[in-house]
Image (cartoon, rainbow, N blue to C red; front, side, top):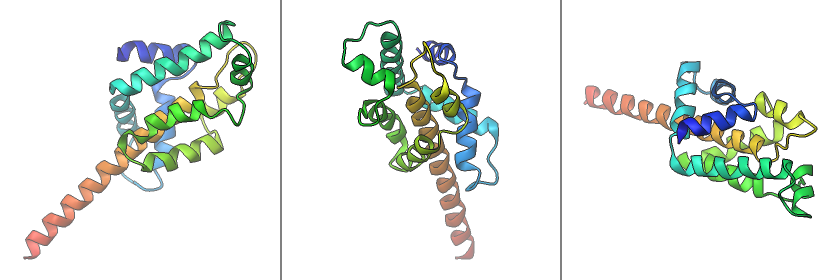
Amino acid sequence: MKELIVKRLEQRGVSIREIADLVYKLQSPYDDTITMDKCIDSVDQVLNKREVQYTLLTGIALDKLTEQGAVEEPLASIIERDEPLYGVDESLALAIANIYGTIGFTSFGYLDKNKIGVMKKLDTIKGEQVNTFIDDLVAGIAAAAAARIAHQKRSEEEAEEELTQKEVS
């Protein structure tokens, strides 16, 4: 299933590396040891989760069905315009962003507001491709991957503190 998800992302113009770039931008101010390989691995781990895979399949399908004219009005126009009050696209993405805790919400909000990297590319594509869901889903993946790294970093720091306290005792 994961291979299918990666293929679908690529078909929509998104690479794992581009998502990892977002993760790096989110985490590098807080972790001076972060590497791109660690970011790619974290994205990979997020994409291994079945609930993430199902959410991505759903959002990508809605974008594609809208492009194909298979979604009824007025919903088709709402999705095509990426109507600001629609919010279903963000709701799906937040389900992904939250898989490693609520810290993912903050990162998602930052990405959704600032539209950097691949999100900016997706947000500015006009014409036949509908990206109402995919841009937010990408932000959700990046936010979850960044949250995963933040939790790992904190666990490492706590283990070091515990070890130091034992050595002092």
